Image 1 (cartoon, one colour):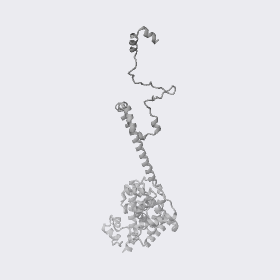
Image 2: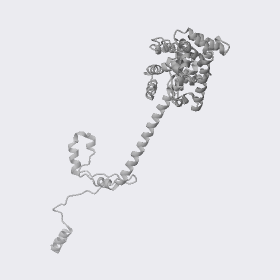
Image 3: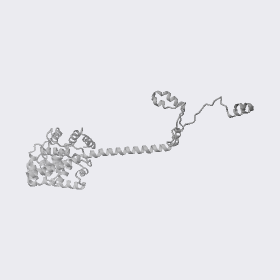
Image 4: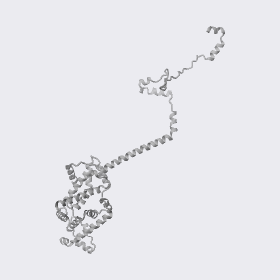
Length: 186
Length: 192
């Protein structure tokens, strides 16, 4: 920094010696302090050498710890709020569409043909034991009854016999028979 | 000057073991010059300023956990640096002088001998006058006169009302001007 040419006397003269702005003029000259040209270049390394020599342990700023905790807290609140909102939305939607939703589901039924077709198509996916447990046409299906009663066996359905004699037929036959023929039968 | 983003970047880096050293280096590179000049204007001699600045950052490293983020990082660092500089001066006074006048004479002599002071007689006289101010007035004067810091910003930094800061600065200026005029004949004869 160059030596200033202005002096205190010059400053006083400039201002008529009444209210001289001494500090204003001196400020233009600077404070006279200088530093070595490369002083700031290696400063950080010099400080770290002293820190390592002193064995000072690093610490996390409290501001950062608080801010991290705050961030987690906000995240948790947001997650909880989203979950509650989703539950409310689902409940409203469920109750509003209860009729339209439940009825179609209730009306969905599977015929025996559908089940049979499905089983035949996917027969390789079933274990032998599972297939063996399937009901057959010869074996009546046993429905699970309440635990305090015996299993209920459904009545066997038999195809109508074309040669079966009805009570009406028997009455006609008896009317057409003579007394002698009846005596022979009895 | 210093942007809030810089502080956020520094704190973010200090938050991880992997980036901690990089963060602390960034902290030092961001604030070292600002703090150096604050310290230098209190202790005046370059070697003392260097010692105080290094001690300041070591204290910061050791006490960074106590930074709560309620103020700007620079404000927090400035307080540590100022306290460190004042402690340094008090310690120096205890070691080598017994009275305030002795301390002022010692500082003036050291400043004259400092190879890193190239001011003329008036600049030396100004530094002597500043060094004789009470600590608070010295802080206010340096921040306002050299740094041109707004009173509002200074208020947060020094925990003092704007009115009190303006009064402090006014008193400091009057004292310095009086000191400069007091023996101006002697000073001017030396300069001439």
